[in-house]
Amino acid sequence: LDASASVAQLVTRLDELPAEGVLEVRGEHDPMGLVHVLQLERANVFDWRLQQTSPDEFILEIRRRRHRAHVDMIAMLEEEHRHLDNLVAQLEARANVGMLGMGRCTYDELRIELERHLDFEEQVVFPAYVAVVPIEEGRVRALASEKAVVRRILRDVGVSLSAGDRTGVLSGLSDLHEVLGPHLATEERTIFPVLSRSLGAPSHPASPPASR
Image (cartoon, rainbow, N blue to C red; front, side, top):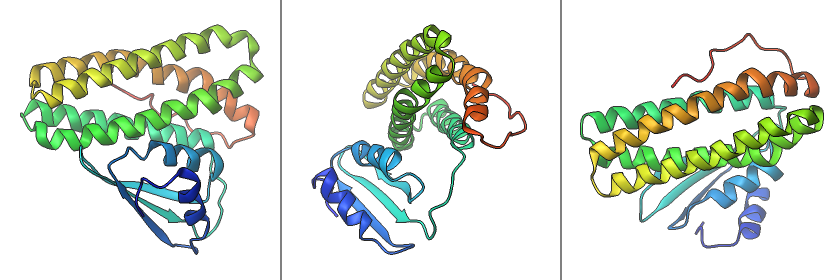
């Protein structure tokens, strides 16, 4: 399916998929809008995977689950933190050896995954936390301001990649570590335990905070 179709048209096609059915979306446009709709409106129905990212084409594979399963939101968010860690580490490793071309694919995946994650936290996680602990609204505002810094740094890394500036990429990733690391660790130490209790989610053994 061409990604130039409207989000409503894409969602209609997805709703028509049988169990285990797959829809491949191709196009020049960032699939963030569709992924965001799936996250918010079709939770626990579809799995998605970014097959390819390049300046010329995105390929997004979406598969309908056999059963609509309950997903522990906190466990999902912690898993996403680990995945973001891995993507940053991969990008850094490739930049260290001068493989900026391969690093571009990793960067594009990191950008999409991180933006989706930040959007979900801003629209779902943070409001749910403030509803339970209104006095923590100041902390949430501080975390939201850090997200703006993370987005700016990530844009700068992309500019350096496009320019073939290895030093700029590594410097930007160092800045990303310094901001994103404490940010995610604060969420895991402070926000997630409160939401876990509020949502009645099963308790998890304390996983190591997202290390940067």
